[in-house]
Amino acid sequence: MSSKKTIESVYELVLKRNPGETEFHQAVREVLDSLVPVLEENPQYVDGRILERIVEPERVLMFRVPWLDDSGKVQVNRGFRVEFNSAIGPYKGGLRFHPSVYLGIIKFLGFEQVFKNSLTGLMMGGGKGGSDFDPKGKSDNEVMKFCQSFMTELCKHIGPDTDVPAGDIGVGGREIGFMFGQYKRIRNEFTGVLTGKGLNWGGSLVRTEATGYGLVYIVDELLKEKGQSFDGKTVVVSGSGNVAIYATEKVQQLGGKVVAMSDSNGYIYDAQGINLATVKQIKEVERKRIKEYTTIHKSAKYTEGCNGIWNVKCDIALPSATQNELDAAGAKALIKNGCVCVAEGANMPTTPDAAELLIENKVAFLPGKAANAGGVAVSGLEMAQNSQRYAWTFERADAELKNIMVNIYKNISQASEKYGAKGNYIVGANIAGFVKVADSMLNQGLV
Ligand code: NDP
Image 1 (cartoon, protein in one colour):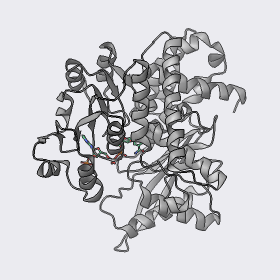
Image 2 (tube, helix red, strand yellow; image 1 turned 90 degrees about the vertical axis):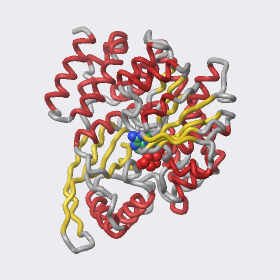
Image 3 (tube, protein in one colour; image 1 turned 180 degrees about the horizontal axis):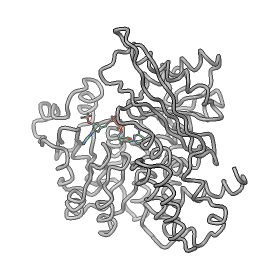
């Protein structure tokens, strides 16, 4: 059978076995389509039925999460953990608490995580979990009760050498703390079973900055290869959350000028360069809208609606807010204005047609799987520090992060070239992530 036919038959199998899970189908399709040249050169992957195995999670856990709300009423949510692939390390990936969560979303994220974690070069397999619980509008007491009930079941399946969850949407320091406390209480052990922990009880320095800094480090490496740097470049960063704020901080440290940022209501443009201290005060401390920026910096301009941000002229664009925020119209505006690089800080912020347009027009496009891997990379470093029972300095963790991002760039760049798609980093990231996992699966026999 030809490689294309093998891929089609695997995809048909995924559709049949996972009905209605559209996000999972989409994620599988994107990865499989990149793998044609790899299968042609490596028949052992086809003979070993690696594709059929890699699209099937090793274990899917689904469980009832009952808890009492503040009025004493019983509430019931559904919990998930998909342990997707452990070929290169313990399962690793976040927990998402959001009403939209169902099995298809968790499978899609878990599948992506397998390749992202592989790209970091660390010993981390892929997994993802969560619940349809919505922490928004709940009291601290209700969030604690939910987290304790959720962990009462999850603790039977995870462990520092088995499966190490972290945060994701709706799961921050507060939720990680409640879950860690319950795990410790039931298991009577203090281990690095979760990452994203508080600095006093096993967390890592640089975790807060990791995704944003990592994003800028990988772009910097790409620029270096072209004989350029951030110095003097104009940059647009969408969002004003964790990723956006620390991406902006690092761009400014490297001499670049960030002129626009956004939130879900609109965007600000400051020709002088964004004052990050003001943005941190508004978003991290006061939790207000980005619009407030213009009351302090009178020369800055606020525009209602966030999509228009891509019309701002820039050399580099870093979409770091949410999925599908950069569409074909946005891509056309960036191309017209001479943008040379788009790197995804968020997960899937660029629509497929926008990514295609950017690549066709020779804009260097770094997909999230590679570009935002800094977050999980520092989670991996948190695991290493927990195993050592030792906390590294900020400088050491930051240097390790930088090294990891530089290596990711080299690996995806080499993979794209080796398989005839030089400069297509989507193909490069999928292939480089896949090969390491596939080879490890073959080494370990039929498991
Ligand atoms: P935050 O919740 O801290 O911030 C998200 C930001 O995006 C907020 O400023 C939010 O605005 C804004 N936003 C939401 N929707 C839109 C929109 N339609 N247009 C413009 N802005 C919008 O999240 P993070 O920064 O942590 O995450 C951002 C993305 O990065 C997500 O896709 C996440 O999955 C991904 N990611 C994050 C990692 C991490 O370590 N944090 C690691 C890897 C990926 P508002 O204030 O109005 O809500």
